[in-house]
Amino acid sequence: MWEATRNIVKKLGLSEKTVASCCGITFAQCYAIASIGRAEEISLNELAETLNLDNSTMSRTISNLVNDHLVERNINPEDRRYVTIRLTEPGYEAFKKIEGGMELYFQAVLGLIPEDKHEQVVESLTYLSEAMNKIVCC
Image (cartoon, rainbow, N blue to C red; front, side, top):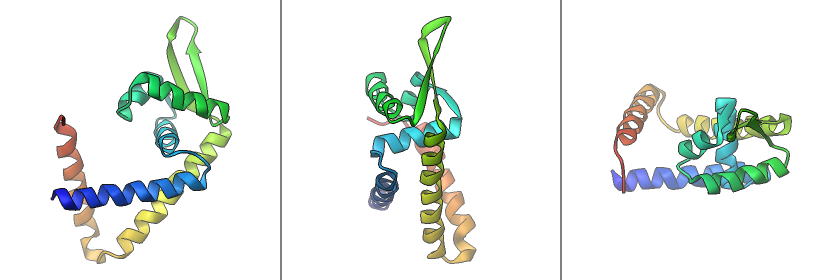
């Protein structure tokens, strides 16, 4: 199982790097944009937790995205430590491109699997994902 999972992770990383490079962003920025886009608005702490990064690393990634006009940072006037992040219009366009690229990739992958097995593949991946979320590693 480890070998199959490692291969899937490797292939997903390569496909996401390809999508990220076509948008002119780094792999880390690609993940951040995708997470922000799915949430619409998210706090810096929640984003760092979602991506399993420390706050300082996440803050640097967000600063680069702000400088590139892909996200905007909103500081809560009542608590300046609480920062939320949203995509700008160019950021939303990058998000759609990232999501579209991954959707095409997975459609191509499913196209190589017999149609009567599609539901089984999705169900198995869901079980695997749920089980992995319950285990604290390392």
